[in-house]
Length: 379
Image (cartoon, rainbow, N blue to C red):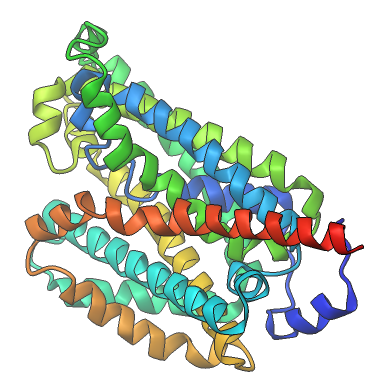
């Protein structure tokens, strides 16, 4: 099933000649899911039950994965922009592929803006936002110019650093004596409605629905039969980590303070004060965000690049990295006039997310099943 036939070999000729391992794909997926989600008030619409909304989002991610997996099984060596044309035809499939490229670019710009705003509010308050965004995008352009293999190998290293940071940060928070799990009680205090609202508008689409971007990277996996195991493991582990982070923020700050805070994890770690010596650990959170957003933007950016190469029959992605990078910098500055508007746009992106993460892939799967049914009858 996962063999490469002659037609697919010709179709994949424009793709970068690279392969990544299962552990590298796992690292990319976990870091991608963390993104900005670790530091924002994730799922707080559910109040004290934010952790439950995150679990709902994780299970929804599994449902979405089943759709992506069934599609990739039929076209294991092709990215989404390519098999969209095989399913819907040359013209409609091309338009759908272009829409996905624009979708990836929009979220790359959105995450660049989020990163710049966090640095402004936490450490670099006197630095122009444009300067931060330019330097950030230039670093990403350099890594992507070297190729997906370099990005994947780098992810292997940084996921270990993230795990160490997570363990150290959690230990310091616990030993500081600020954790009160009574802040999480009672469970379902306001019923199921706030949880379902948080799940539908926040924890489902973000970040688990955004993992549709990995349908562009699966052809690079050196052992395609491991897709199912790698994706599900990454989804479950990142989901549980995000669930724990949401719970910890509420246990330390209380749901009301988390709701008021822009970056609750910064506030949580900021309360650490051991022996009047170990304090001001904000740098751990900022550096963690630097790593996670760097990889999330890189993945969105790279998948947009290979989508453009595929749709416009270009030679390689390297020739368009810097022009598209300049466009991303411009988008990141123009998508909102201030940080409050930027946050509001993120909260209102549900209707923008849903077609790309669920409706179009599900429609593709239904059409594919119908086409396969006709082929079986014809045979």
